[in-house]
Each structure stands twice: as C-alpha cells, then as structure tokens.
Image (cartoon, rainbow, N blue to C red; front, top):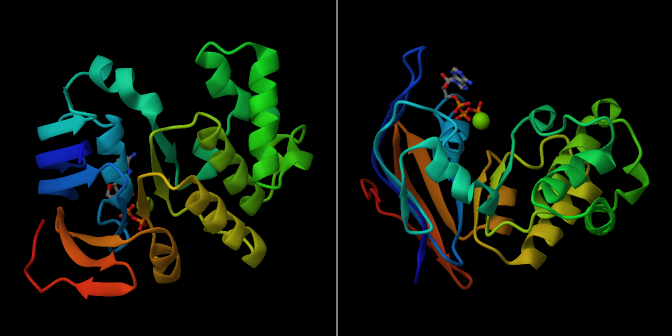
Length: 234
Ligand SMILES: Nc1ncnc2c1ncn2[C@@H]1O[C@H](COP(=O)(O)OP(=O)(O)OP(=O)(O)O)[C@@H](O)[C@H]1O
Ligand SMILES: [Mg+2]
C-alpha cells in the first residue's frame, strides 16, 4: 500500500499557546478513509493546515505522496492533489459568482475558459446546484455556500479529500446528497467531524485528537467495528 500522507513527530504551537501538535504521528494510506474527532480548539482544522503547509514553524516531518515537504515550494508542488474543503466556506469562495469560483482552479491549472466552464457546470449539476451558477457567491445561504465550496474542490479531481465539518448547515436532503456524492467518488479522505453518523457513513477508521496527539478510536472491517483498546496510540 502506498502512503499518501505521513506526519512524523510533528510539533506545532499556536501563538496563543495552544499546542495543536505535540509529537503527532499520522498516516493516510491509499484507499483509506479516516475521520478525526476531538474537542473544539483541539487542533483538528490546524491539522489539515499542517498537511497543506499553510502554517509555519513546525518541528517534525511531513511527507506528501512520498516526498518530504519542508519549504513552501515543496507543498505548492503537491497542494492541488489535496482537496481541502474549509470549515468556513467563506474562506473558499472569493469570486463574484459561483461559476467563477468553481472555474478558478481549472483555469489556474491551464484549462481554457470554455473547458473550465463545462467541467464546472458538470460538477455543479452533480451537486444539484447548477441553478446557482450565476449567483453572487457571498449572497448564498450557508448550506448553498457549503455545496459551492465542495464544488470548487471536486472540480479539481484531487487525489485525496480533506473535509472539515462539511455538513454544517446542510438540510437533510443535501446532507444525504453529500454523503452519496463523496461515497460515489470512493477516494481516500480525511474527515473532520463532530457528527458520529457522518463519520460512520464516510469513513472506516476513526481517530481522536487530544493534547496534540492522535489516538485510534475504532476501525471497521466490513460490518464489524473494532474498538481500539485504551492507550493504543498510532
Ligand atoms: N489562523 C489562526 N491563527 C492563530 N490561531 C489559530 C488560528 N486558527 C486556529 N487557531 C488556534 O488554534 C487552536 C486550534 O484551533 P482549530 O481551529 O485547529 O481547532 P478545532 O479542533 O478545529 O476546533 P473546532 O472543533 O471548534 O473546529 C485554537 O486555540 C485556535 O484559537
Ligand atoms: Mg475546526
């Protein structure tokens, strides 16, 4: 099995003194779907920022797709392969319209405007929000923004999905649509969520982030759930 993401002995402290990583170890293998839970402020969103190289001054090693990443250039080279859906969709949507937001990544990757629009409209259709294409992004409802943010990521066809509380604000129909869409992609993912039902629906390995370290909570093989024995740190 190839390792997509590997964090070894990572140490990172926020300026406010919050020790988000304190000798943190983590691996995501190809085809694995893992979730991370933990208290508010424990560092779950920060963990995704660490993986994307969006924070500085860390100790330890971060390897992405087998390459050790230290400098911004190392992360920049592989960042588009990691599809991060931010906890706050307003961090993801910055163009005047939804279609432009979704087109932004593909155009940046060198696609012509026509091809980017075609791909973007297909992605919007897949998420049932093609009717929002020409809407002003910042005027969307909370749930609509969340789906639009997901579209900006899916359109890039990343190798790994990093989802940070992706269902906050979604109604029942869109909650299920998101689950079905993500499951139909059948791709490796890291899900940050406080929602046990969502973690069960999308992932089969669950970790808890506490005191800057990840502890295995459970892993599933087929229909059986194997609860980790206490103290089992991975
Ligand atoms: N951009 C930032 N700049 C400075 N400190 C930050 C920043 N983002 C988060 N922090 C701090 O880092 C710590 C961890 O925050 P983080 O957002 O990673 O927690 P979380 O586990 O995702 O919480 P939640 O469950 O509420 O989403 C907190 O103390 C927070 O104040
Ligand atoms: Mg968070």
